[in-house]
Image: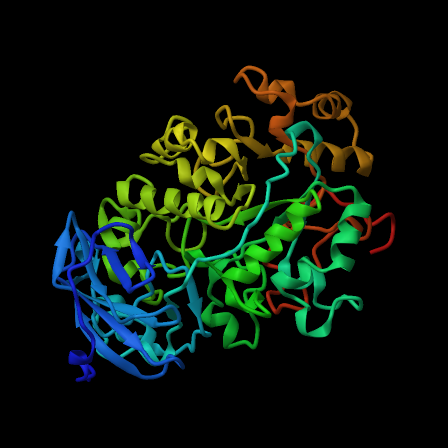
Length: 497
């Protein structure tokens, strides 16, 4: 049942821009895009996130944005949305006001998800599957969004702006890199703050690297099937909030702690690059949970099957693909990228499965709106842009095909070096191209040799030690029976497996 204390909060019309919850020093403006919704409720929660204090209808709508202003709300207020509209999956509509939804523009998302069937818009196990309807309240199991005060003293923070031809990138996982570091204070290990400690920075400087590339730090979800097996989505390629740093990596704060980390790394000449996952979300396929985008405006946010809108186009292998053809989805991603540059001061991005972002119709299109917008943007065109130049769809392998202004993980460099090291014949010519800048891939498109991000190992597939230890995968510990991960690792066990 909805709470009855709605009259304790003054509600003013507010504005349709900016999207999200914005603290202006006196109150907070709330704005949510939904093209097809019939109504939106703003839900406020107590500091523990357990009790819904108020459910406030957002009575004002401008240009498909629902909005209101609460003059008495302060930073720290927890909130979420409920969105009203038809539940008709066959037409791509999956509204269910019983489900509390995260704000796509939330700057902080706090609390672990507590998995249960109530988080799904349909009755799990029903013979009609997702064509059925679930009326249970999902709020008790949902994380909550938080209104923040963005104030931070950057002082003389200055991005290092290391030229591409001098850039050496170190990929790392925020938690894994420091969780067992004996010289990092125990209460900071595994956090953003830990990356800003002197032992860590000294180590990075001794390595001679110029940039750290952080594996996903956007707020993400642990998949239900993993949690029920006692496991976690450790890497984090399962985003649900594109503006919020994941709270699990925070030791002393959250947004302010992340900013302090960036400022400290910058003062030591180290750039910060984020591995970002804009190609899909944690809501999965049509049988996935209703956490955010699906319940706000499913047919706008996701690529639906043109022959049956009940189903999603899946170019990512993760159940869904964000709809880059919709202007509001493009705006979401561009606003997110600009936020991390202007507000969080990061220096660049590595785009996971970047080919999926360039699919205008079905094929990968290097002239897609996504590239056009970034190319002309005065902020984003000036930071480091790295593509993982493939996805799982047809024609998704696009090494060498991204436009000017982009660099790429050069999978052909990786494979040539591994094959040569393994002792395979006939690879000298290929290796020569790779070691001399891969002109066969980049020169015709007007790009320089630094468009190639050369690497031998990364988080995908075998580690460097694995490459000289095993011919086959041995992923026994995770219970997947070796079905996960890349099969073609070009490795050699040197005679003993």
